[in-house]
Length: 68
Image (cartoon, rainbow, N blue to C red; front, side):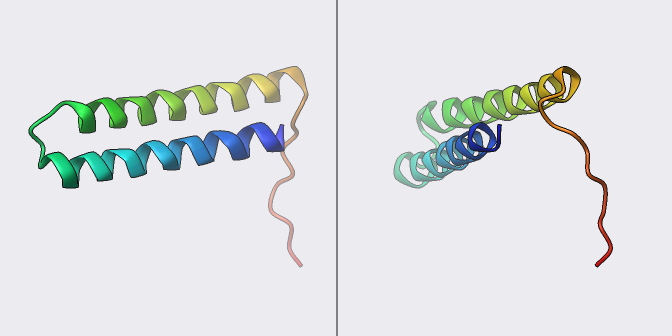
């Protein structure tokens, strides 16, 4: 599960970087920036739902805050 979350974060950051690249290159004249940001939002929602599903199925467990 940790690997899946890490991969999802990398994809989200990659989509955010692509949106920034398109914003700088196209100066907002094309829909590439909007499309990249929409992909980022979709990936973020999917990651949230996968974490929620993994918790409900017992794959992950809350650990709380551990005081040292």
